[in-house]
Length: 225
Image (cartoon, rainbow, N blue to C red):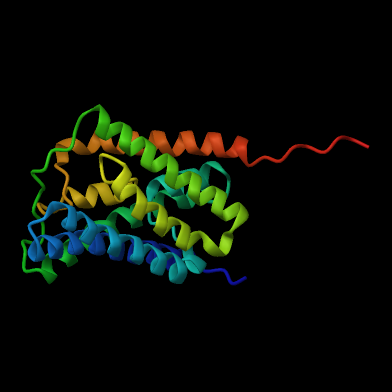
């Protein structure tokens, strides 16, 4: 298996997160432009997000692992699969890439490059939804890596597609994406004031999934001969 230097891995993380956010924000803008039906708008936002995740994980995963998410990098660091000395750089690349993705989407639709969102997303159901969404995402990734490593891209894409619809928060499940979505006053935005609770819920969900899945995926120790 080929290995890549930290510079190329960080570039892959930034690029992948940028395209992910560009898909989230851009498809949201396009959906609102095409229809006034909120259900169809959400569907128009959901399908491109799930699809781009499959593409990005498949193409960039062999380079960086395709985290595109600080919560995922945190979990892999805790598992000893991402050195602590590199984890912070991964997270920084993801946040910067995510912000760039929001700006790219705005430029494509002739919007202000940065426009802080006024859409408040708050309350216990929203926070719990983000906990559940991130727990499920990490559980999907960890079990997928263990049992179906070649299917992780499809598993993650399908999970996020589903989670858009079964969570009250529409499944951000990603602190970098949440930060970027605070920079867009469009369909997919979240007000900066709503960010801290969302990010805290996402990190809590990731850590809970890490603890549970570490236990769940540990096979029974064979008896000593």
